[in-house]
Image (cartoon, rainbow, N blue to C red; front, side, top):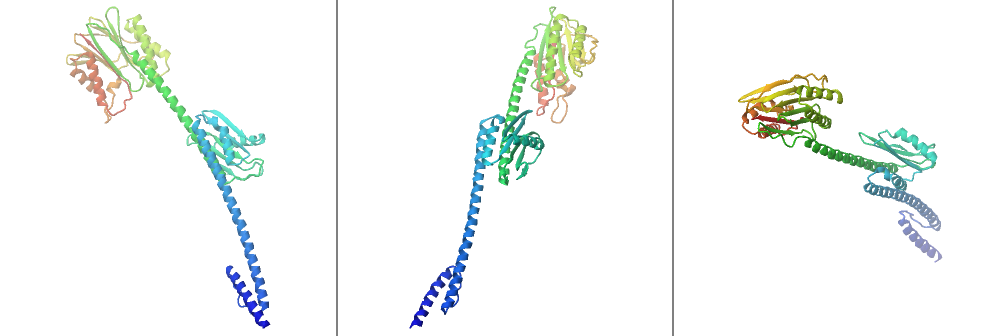
Length: 462
């Protein structure tokens, strides 16, 4: 009876132990004696204890991994927050140097550095913002000189002497604008790849702000220059005569079209007390503002000298000497100046200009150059030629922008086309002849950028 009870008890405990062992995938085998049961229970206990210790180690490792991931996530969040705040600051302020201190402060929240510097060079104006101790500042100054002209980020995770550091040059393909450096000087800070990425992202935003500022300043300067050129253009247009002398013997028309906002072509007509007129057409060497300034000076010379003296030889000599003395070497003016009396006597000087055309009936007479362009030699020696006009003669003066205008085929307008237009429209008023010539040039050169001013002056002797 006693043995049966013991056997039943062993069997009951064995069943319980087997169920527990199955929970842990452990096989306890067959048990028939109390000693075997005791041994198996000890083995099962040891197995379960080891399993639980392993689970604890795995749990601790998992917890460490989770903590590391949370720390990295937190750093990423801080970095994104810093970038977001920096972007807001940059968007609200035009001048990049105004945000340097705020940028370093926000970057420190994202990357826990002990020292940092933001160095900017904008239009040769130097800006510096430091964070950290005096000793760290001296080291960062060395880093600025060493790395500011580099092309790539310098990344040192840790250095025993100077600490780890990240140095990001601020540059485009064409310009260097400074450098952003953060350092772990005096600490055991070890910089990570994430720290490098955040610092580079902040540097890129700073560079964007600098580029935007420079582009804005250039646009402002461009608009200011355009406004000034427009003012100069209006002033120059005002220098051309708005009306011509009213005389029953002369019908006068003229027109100018500038290739740029301002140009170097000029025409003018002044009337003397004796009823004669002095006409001028001129073409200043060069283009744009320099030519326009010389043209303005020449106009003043012509107007003042023409009122003082009507001696053509003297006028030509004065122009040649003044232009030679007043302007740099290589600056000159080709010009035709001609004076016509009411009786039809014409005196003229052609200073290196294209021929002056006289249309008489169906024939064109060409009055060629009588000397060098004004300002070339400065010696003032010019021959004054005479020509007797007849009733209905037409005088046509023009600049080389007329005959040298090109079409899309690269062909020049040329002298022959000009002569044909003059002949075909000889019965029109002087101003209408000018319109015909100018319109023909514009139609011929349609679709092409013209590089020279176009000017025509027509006088009909009636």
